[in-house]
Image (cartoon, rainbow, N blue to C red):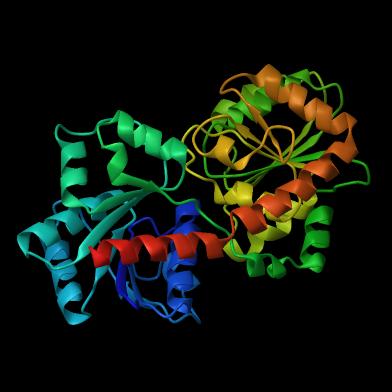
Amino acid sequence: MLMNILITSQKAGMAGSTYSTTYLAKGLSERGHKVYLACPDNSLMQKMLKGSSVSHIPMNIRHKLDRKNIKQIANIVTEYNIDLIDGQSSKDRYTTILAKWWYRLPVKLVHTRRQLALSMGILGQSWFYEKGTDRVIAVSKGVKQSLVKIGISPEHIEVIYNGTPAEKYEAVAPEKVNLLKQQFDIKEGEFVIGCVARLKEQDQLLEALHLLDKPVKVIFVGIEPQEKYKNIIENYRLPHSIHFAGAVSNSEVLNYYPLFNVKVLPSTIEGLSQSLLEAMALKVPVVATDLGGNNELIEEGKNGFLFQHKNTRQLAEILQKLINSPQLGVQLGSFGQNTALNTFSIHNTVVKHEAMFERLLSN
């Protein structure tokens, strides 16, 4: 069954959700469906669609009750004969539901949740989300559990994991990797810890360095230096080397992973992290907080390690183990690559979305 699908997202900047949403749109389009992706003009998401058969529709939502956007959604459904809408971010969760209700749109509506739901929101919000949609997609069991806690019925939620495209990693450029090694003055035998993420709980990694028995180099990709980190860094008992690379474009970020002996993700809100998948696909061992979808992606001691939130001693012990045993890192990297490129392939993600959409349209 070929479908006309509208995907909406206001989160179209430098974030894992941008990449996940774009991979999904492209994958569905490559399987013959007509896919329209409505997101802000001149956004990273729009730029990532270049060269694909996905049609971009400029969409800017001012607020959750934006009547202009609600009418725009209704017009898109009518003009392009849309069968199904997939709302990907907070504002369009409201406007897609209201558009369907107010204009009696003959479409199926799903919402995708990519991060843990941390609160109930306004009174009746969970009822609104459940009654207004035909299904909610959670990108991990952890996200599903968080949605159930705020009042959405488990039967209304379907888990479909994020995926990553294998061809993406062909973009790693050895000459750029070498330039980065020179830029960060990485020497033979030096242990390098990488953290690719927006501002999260990076202070936990910085605090864990106090407990290591050997100086290491840490490269934070995605954030600038923070005032709150200054005292932690200034009081190190060992001369660790800390670098902040700031925001790095999607086309360049993959060249950082070959610098790392391990990638650490200290985060409490992950649904299923694209940056963990990237590291694993490139054979970099991963260590992440035991929350959200991280423990569904990481098999303890097989393709990575998990640590308890705020337990910086446990994180330090894991890092020390990897420093002392380079072969362990090689083994983790090998299993991790298989996990990312096979178990969590974008093909699996797209096929499962397609099957669920078809079931909804058949009922």
